[in-house]
Length: 119
Image (cartoon, rainbow, N blue to C red):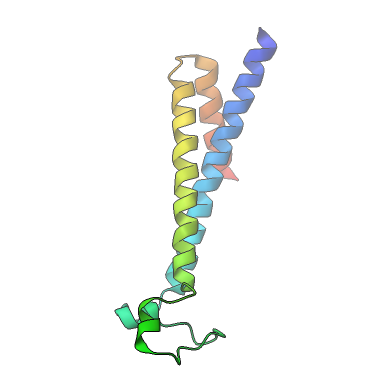
């Protein structure tokens, strides 16, 4: 039916916009993660708590091997991983819709990608 087709095109358009938004969010998160990395990438700098952390490293050296709280860059990496999974799932969903070889669905995907990039 024409209403179902219009709804399908709108859904693909929105999925394409969301794909572009996730792609931009991932880039912003990458920039923040790079700023959160310590200047020195030695093992000590990556496992030591940040200067402003409340949990001090006054314990034995065995506590340093297994830090209780992860550094900030680790949580940015977890966020990037989740954004990547969402981006891959959305990309495959849009690809499968386009592979239906329907011109209107294809145009909806192109329009959504264009609109998402523009926003």
